[in-house]
Length: 337
Length: 273
Image (cartoon, rainbow over all chains, first blue to last red; front, side, top):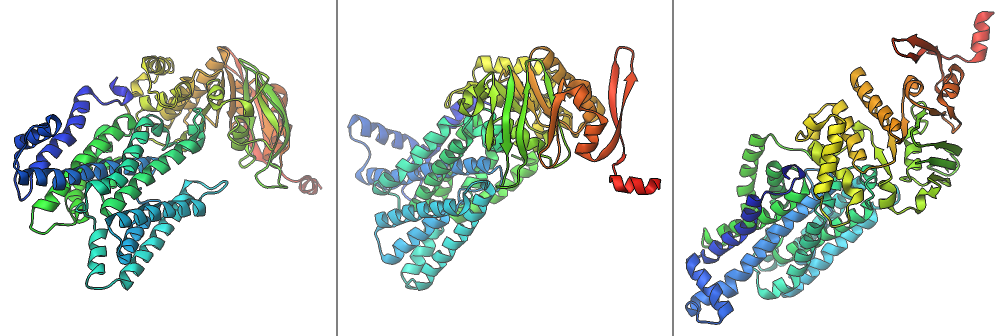
């Protein structure tokens, strides 16, 4: 069955267990150290209702670290899954979750929210809204009879730069002492805002998007083909592309609305997975989701625990990601779509 | 499976007709060759026949059933399309994965390929003699091998009609023969084949019927031996050609050799004077 491109049993187990194992360890890491066994005790206690750890430990674990790690998992899995979908959709290895201008739009929304002095939820809402606006504008500008996907990519780039300019405008008018640092810091990406309230609004689009893309994983193999080829397999390729775009942009907008622009994950993880598992989405997509989640938990744990002040994740994803990626690329000789 | 086109007309823009009132039909076991100069619209013709482009008027029929009203899955499990090898994308799939994609017209939206799909792929690859390519990436095989992979991909859909876009272009002599022989064998077993070609000789050697397109939308259709003649070649391609016969041990093979660019009549008269 290997030829079909399904994951072997061994990989299936590893990829399923890995994110949760890493999450379990990451839950304990921080200035207040909790050992993995204590974490397990506490989790069991939640389910059975018996007494867990000390008050302090319980609070740190459940109110601070747990939502943050759930957020990291979702964002990592989501961005990596969306990146993978976009690369196949545009048959372009350089496509990222931001290709259609979603992330820029969502960033603008968040910056605007911060400028207006909205609370975290308000910022998240404006961000989601603007992300959606950006995609719709991209679609209106780029689609049309007889136009291909490359027109949409181009108009996505235009929308992206338009919204980036708007972000700069917001920064320009922001109050220098308070708002500007907040906006700048937020744009660099931080999972620090994580709370169950944030997750309630942000998690469903991500989970839904990933689930739909996962269900379509075999059909997604048709995405890099030319339209005529894909159509000659009796597939409604326009519908398939539409679904892929909706899922991937929904995931991206939702990620950005919760934790700012986290670069690199959507490019790095799918590439790594392509080198290891090939281009068949039967194995590529689950691998991207799992390793994206794992990678993000690790990066975020480093970001919050290495130095006293928190390091923005975008900086870390690039610092860890770029060299690692270069090593992998040189070893495997790269890949094509 | 009988493939018929009735009164097919097509234009990209209003006013500039590419084809007008095209009529032809091909039966099971027959091969139709579509000939024509660059830019006459051979590929457009194939796309119209298969319904990828809509005829502006007229229709394509599969066994008396209008293609545009057939559900995509039904249509594409009866008819299969082989694109030009150079136009094929997604070359990072292995040959096996590529061929397996052809089973899509038999799979539901969310279903994954099953054992019978895999067996079908293995059977077809064996039949075409490309089993050895299974684990190679499509970017790492030769043009001829890729063309065979694409034909295999079309065949795993178990079609009764096969549409090929310049299957033997860009191939060397041996690979041309392999591809053309494959097509002839398929037709012998009842497949309806339609193929585009740049080589009138291949039409003469392989096809029962031929359709010659000229720029401007004129066309001739009929039995290959009647239609592919020196006069029609000159009309369509603007080339003086001779058709000759070459005897081999077991057959007489027709060949077409282009001699010179055809000149305007006046021009020739002047020279004679």
